[in-house]
View 1 (cartoon, rainbow, N blue to C red):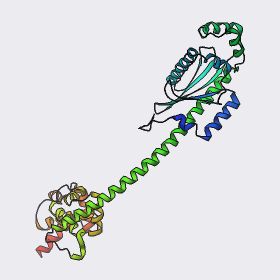
View 2: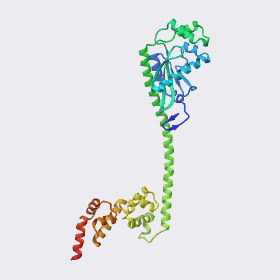
View 3: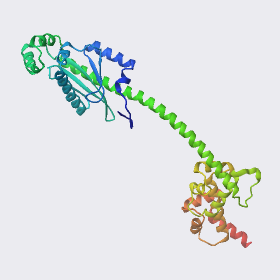
View 4: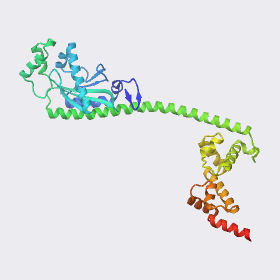
Length: 345
């Protein structure tokens, strides 16, 4: 059976028949209709469970006493179920022995999980002429007319409108069963899967921590002459290396992932470590470095401001102008004029 993307060997009947709510709903249906309900696993040879047990009509027992009669009944049910599937609803049909049945396909996301049947009734009181025709059709079963008539006249009679109402009721009933069965089953599967995912996540966390510790240890053994005190630890060593990388590449289109890769850390861990050690986010630090570069270029060169924007790593002039003004308290043009006046004086 296919449920929510999982293929499993599972009997819908084994689960459904263990549900108390199922017995209660079946009892309500039987008391109000007097009609048997049959549940069947997928496939023509699937296991069948009747409710109530041993309450099949004497007429059906008589017909199904022979292997031929049983097979003819099953064939009628198969055709009725196929029609119900095509309609994606219930299907009312006449069986080969003259009774009226209802078939409902139980499906979940296109996968068959079983079927339901009810009926085994007549729509009008028995008539001798109709019974003789049925007897002729069943001649090969070897049932005498007298035995057939005695059982046939005991069959429950249900009006067509009432049978239609019962069929709709059972269809709603079937939808409830499918929903209940799959929700309960999925809860069980999700619980198992959640525990497995939790176990794997813990293993992943442990592995990542081991790799991070190993990375920091390796970097520590490859120290460069940076201003890091022994008390600052390997985390500061890594961030100092990252800051050096930023200083060399701020004019390029670098991202946090690029810097993290340069120091052999995952982006998430690097971002957290950078904030803790440097006291600011990676993004803020990068912007400050670019603004510092822009200030130097404005003060020391005659380059057009638009070219300074590109050289300092900014892509958009307006964004650069707003950011520079926010950080420096003045526009780039006024900043340059102020520097020029100071130099002239």
